[in-house]
Amino acid sequence: MRAKIIRYINLLSIFYLGLLSRHVAYAQTAAPGVAPVKVYNPIEAESVPQLVNSIVKQILGIVGALALFMFVYGGVLWMTSGGNSSRLEKGRETLIWATIGLVIIFSSYAILNFIFASLTGPS
Image (cartoon, rainbow, N blue to C red; front, side, top):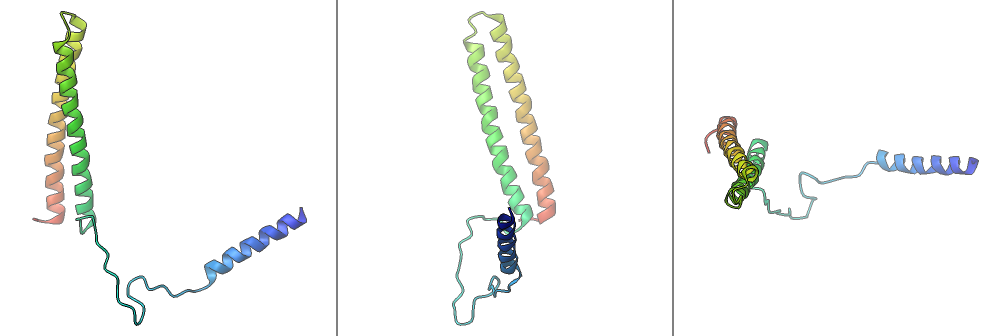
């Protein structure tokens, strides 16, 4: 038991020595005599609001595709109801809720586009 405690204390001391020792890191500038490395930025956003704007637009695009899928699903239910009133009603309800969802998607896109345009300025 005592050996485990000593081993544990030794490991902690090695860990803390590693944290407390100072190392030179050239994070903002290149080391003396070394040319800086150019890194390609795949994200076209140059600020946080622009990044959030692009993420929100991607999410709204995915949700719009899901709304299109729900339109197709509701239409298929309606067309294949074969006189079954419960399937006809389910297809009708699916189309109504998909339309409401699409209205919400478009209005949220307009609201968010206005908010991000006012935050980032005209582009």
